[in-house]
Image (cartoon, rainbow, N blue to C red; front, side, top):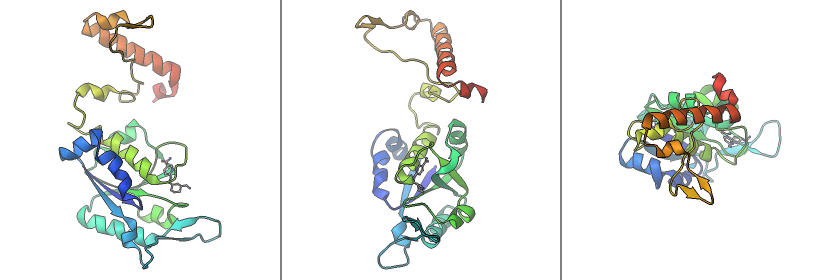
Amino acid sequence: MRFDIITLFPEMFSAIKEEGVIARAIKKSIISINEWQLRDFSENKYKNVDDKAYGGGAGMVMQVKPIRDCIKKIKEQEPETKVIYLSPQGDPLNQNLVEKLSSFESLTLLCGRYEGVDERIIKNDVDLEVSIGDYVISGGELAAMVLIDSVSRRLPNVLGNKDSLNDSFVNNLLDYPHYTRPESIDGDIVPEVLLSGNQAKIDAWRLEQAKHKTRQKRPDLLSN
Ligand SMILES: NC[C@H]1CCC[C@@H](CNc2ccc(C(N)=O)cn2)C1
């Protein structure tokens, strides 16, 4: 799977490319991440890609042409890519959407800054607007990294241990509780069942715990 990133801060993506699950997935050629510096598509010698907003207001708006030219360049290599714009106005990124996105061969992630992009980009060039949550951060880059991480984890052979696929939300349930050594610390002991060696009983207990925790903390997930 290929991710193309349109951004003013390409170096931010070293945060996921150099460490951990994503770095390993890149090394195993399961995914590739290509950053495109939007300033390279600027029309002027100052390399700016934003301009004052029609209708006034303090902030600047990202112009159509540099973004449109960059997408065109990407589509010369990936004609089928889906263009995703990260913004608080987007569809909520949840496990269902993550699963859907993991089925594409190529995703282009447009990272906004300033007050956002010219609406004509959202109307004509963006296939899907996605939000990682109901809050604003200073740029789309961190949201893009969250999307890349959550989608890549769902690709075959990215996660070492198949069991990791049972983490939260995969079956619309929150994760079950985890314990490790020592068996007892400060008088706090590990649940007996986990020491029983009876895997069927352990699995049943874990499923019950996940359901209980979901009922308590996120009953909304149970109505999906
Ligand atoms: N009007 C503010 C807005 C203009 C366009 C650029 C974004 C970048 N920041 C983001 C991006 C995404 C999210 C999210 N929830 O997925 C939050 N924040 C900020």
